[in-house]
Length: 131
Image (cartoon, rainbow, N blue to C red; front, side, top):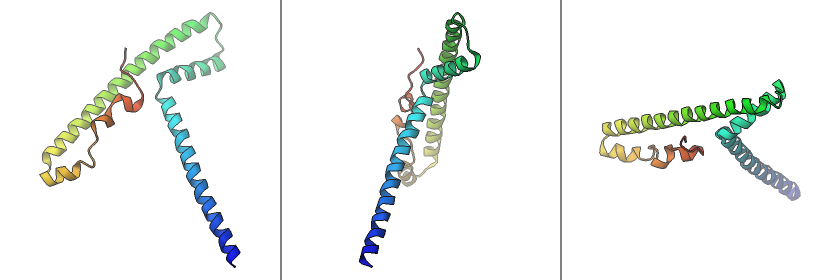
């Protein structure tokens, strides 16, 4: 009976370790995917790869298509950066307005929910301001 208990305990430990490792690997993979989606260079490469695969442009067309794609990606990045900046401003105005309605005790409790200044900037999203 003692040996069976040890086997069960070992199996439970193995399952917990496997779950932990799987969770860590999954989190790392998801983070890599998110970083790739937030990288404008990745947008460009992905679209060009799909375009080449489906449309099969001629060698003369490729640089022209690439130029159009580069222009569009720059424009999309500008729009994205502007949207992030505007959204951040809305969040800070909301925080300020809510803080104005709170008692001193509530403000102290609100500090735990309130975003930190570094939480809402472009560095968090691995982007840089448009050039």
